[in-house]
Length: 261
Image (cartoon, rainbow, N blue to C red; front, top):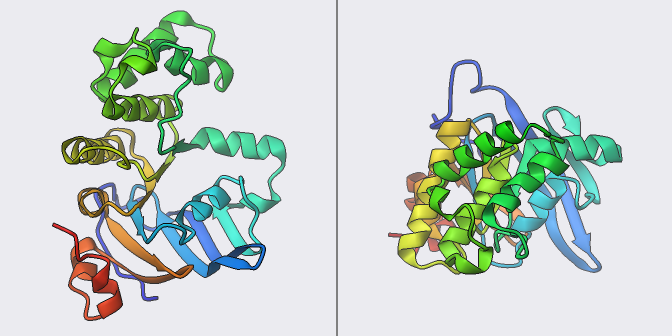
């Protein structure tokens, strides 16, 4: 798979060569099913990389290996230059404060208000005690995702799009350097999906995040991607900009874009 040189939105002279996620010859099987087959990928600081592929192709398995939730059968995954599989429990905890993970559901605590959901990682993960500073951080991140007016609502009072925004806010509140989005627009209507996709771009610019976005939503890919990687049958078969791959001479690559706008 050839790598295409692409200027991306978060790029600076200092950052454009810095690799923050380095996957080399990664393989992972579950029983007799080989899910990942010798995949390699380098992700530079500040870029949004979209991984496209059909369901069950191992896209989510890749990001679980990045945060140490799964251990590769072979190959290496390095984050900030450190091999994840060799990290101690304490080192993994430290890594996970730098890597934010937005689940499909948003994963809010239903028994807590939006405010309490935001406070939880600040007090439990960052061990913050200054209530004024906590309030400031909560209000800032909710304002950034357009949910400040919902600060005292329960998750059950929020729409699907609002829950997704709240989940993103709670992930961003600890100011991670890397964001992992697992199907961020699944289950949302087209207008809300576009809003979430544009919000991912706003997060990249405001917080200078590096992001991996797992999706099969072509509009999401088109809006958010600096670079697109296509996965088929457990392998990366192509990478490049959205338009480059959409207009590829390879029939299999083009087939992924049949429903793209």
